[in-house]
Length: 354
Image (tube, rainbow, N blue to C red; front, side, top):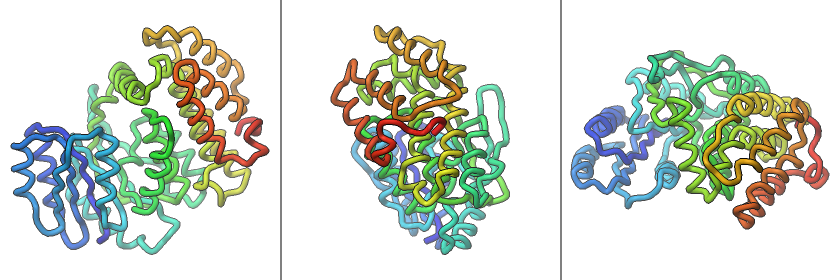
């Protein structure tokens, strides 16, 4: 099996059901379609059961959170590559066929981490066509630079990913003690560190930005995720700063970057940190009604004043110290998780700009 189309679904609208049925139409010898529905809606379940057939698997699951639905859906995949599709998004018939064909061509090439293409974005202000410039490079620094240099939604997340790479990325992030709203970006970073992405050369996916369509809806969605993780709303003030730190730490010290030279790892960490710090600088003025806003603001001001130099170990201690104000056990687990990746010499002082 070359490609698994994976649809973790919860919506019960006619549109969502129609998109699921369209995806089921792509099933063939090279493509399997796996739908895992956790809505609990009886009418939807009756409709989905009627769609079962060769290479079309419909799984009726108990209600669960979105993260669990994604993870459990991925476990069902049998294809060489997996392609996640939300039930509010869709893909293009010929694009899916091309992705499956490329998946078969590159399956034996371990340097290839995934298959991407051109995307149609549905935004509140209109439609856009987007693609990445250089994620097909054999140079990991060029791939990371292309990814963070694109100012738009995370399209790597909606590419076809080699199943082993996707499984490793999800397992790593699932082990993180705190689930952050930006962890889809770290998942994509792991995929880029793991290999290059070939381009299908055509439209493959129509992406509805939904809960991340505007700054206000993005912040509201983020706050729900922080609350689910047991974190104070003031954590949202540190959003891009923590994303900068976690991504740079991952590029420097994780097993996914271990095969690269120190210079390559430092270049990727610096580029990631610089871009996320700019996002942080543009986003830091928001307040979310927390009693810890003064402490969060003080931490923000400290690290903006330190730019462009940074010390990852010190930043990790500062972020963990902030979390410890309201969740000491979570803070200890968080600090230990990230520090466990680094060599002993780096746990107390990481190199400047890395």
